[in-house]
Length: 123
Image (cartoon, rainbow, N blue to C red; front, top):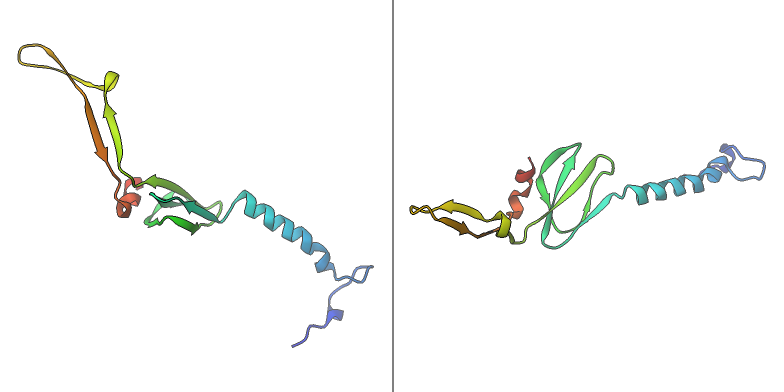
């Protein structure tokens, strides 16, 4: 099947009109991809939780390059590495003993988010 170039309207220079608008369309497409990229990179040690119009998707996004729909979806990156929470200094726990003496308790909690349950933490 051949395309008949005589079917397309031509401007005064002999170039079809749709070819003149093609650079503008390409520039607009490139600007859209720069402003709202369709890809997100999840670093190692993290999982991504995809939010579509504010609702969390139950499937976690693995580390690496992932596809999203710009302006509709966004990704929250959650660390799955072991983290610590310290209760020391001003945050320490004060309690009284039987004798009425103040006991200052310092505590460190180690925790980790399970990668397969990260989306459940958002919901």
